[in-house]
Length: 264
Image (cartoon, rainbow, N blue to C red):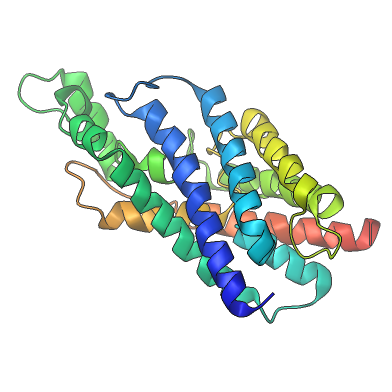
């Protein structure tokens, strides 16, 4: 694979991943959406299908890493780091493009949601709603969950451990079952396997932190949230932003280490 193929494949694939994954979060969250309150099962399935779609699109070009934790784990597995910067650049750029496209697709819903008194407070709003938004704006704004993850209980050690464990499961499944014959990306069957594993992680381990399990998936959209001209959007929770970056990288590295010891 050439560097240009890798960059283009990772950019397009990660953009599709975030567009569809962030899209299901927007569909479930925003008040004027027909899928409002569809629930966690819809989110877990939506992200799983997003992974499957993105893998099949990007696979022929780049092997469909779509995740810096995957890229780093494969480099640790094989000892080949030459293409890592190109993969990372495509993944982070694609994640930002995908997040921006979610905003475009739900532009009217974002405006309606973030100008609703029940969401953002204001004259005539209930005092409880105002207090809730004030609490959110100190860290995470009312639509940040569409772009990035956040903990239900803010406990740094537990939050980091949750991301490590979830990504460890994902990477161990990819390394043992999902790689193509060359061992450098996801194969045809691997795309389906990985999608189902992502659904499983979401349903089983996603509750505490929202299961980023992908540094680009979280950091790229968080940057876009900070830059977009959304009214009353609140904060981007930068104090938490390192957890869904560092945790998945550690989890992927641990999975690569175990693979090299037990399976290679």
